[in-house]
Image (cartoon, rainbow, N blue to C red; front, side, top):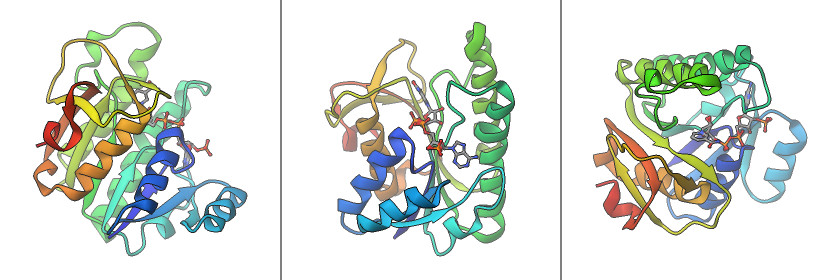
Length: 210
Ligand SMILES: NC(=O)c1ccc[n+]([C@@H]2O[C@H](COP(=O)([O-])OP(=O)(O)OC[C@H]3O[C@@H](n4cnc5c(N)ncnc54)[C@H](OP(=O)(O)O)[C@@H]3O)[C@@H](O)[C@H]2O)c1
């Protein structure tokens, strides 16, 4: 199955593309913003297309059986970009999926996006944007899975996580384990229609997302 990865030049995106490239039966289509990044990916045997969530991105979704949205405006841009990428960029991709496919949609959201009022300070507008994008997806009719990881780290993956509809404790998770969870969601139909908070834990990813 072809899997469109939106945000493929990001830290999770790169790990995911590499993981899917090496996996059986899943073929990543990496959407990046720069032609040089696309050329570099192609040189490594990955199908890559340029696209921009504020502009055109349809080519990245052509022929895909699933899409993974792991884009984000990042910590170094203003709240305008949080709205335009994390919220509106996601909604634009969902609208495209409803009109032209694919139906399977995996969203990388964030822990506490289910309840932004529980947060205060600078992170709250970001969580509101994530909440609104998630709500749109929940009501869209698309075959969604929403992953809400805690603080992301560059630590090596362990393949073990804690996953539940809601986890009260704060915590972290290596991006590599988020990528593993995304791959699991792509393979496991029982993850359709589910929302998971995701932290480092003790349970193998396959079991934790059951
Ligand atoms: N940091 C955390 O602790 C944390 C915790 C929970 C959830 N999250 C969420 O997890 C997701 C992935 O995190 P990450 O660390 O992998 O993020 P990242 O490294 O910042 O990657 C985000 C990607 O989004 C892309 N992007 C931004 N604007 C775009 C646009 N207009 N069109 C197309 N692509 C665009 C960026 O492209 P360029 O490479 O071209 O800039 C980048 O590759 C994000 O949604 C983030 O909010 C983060």
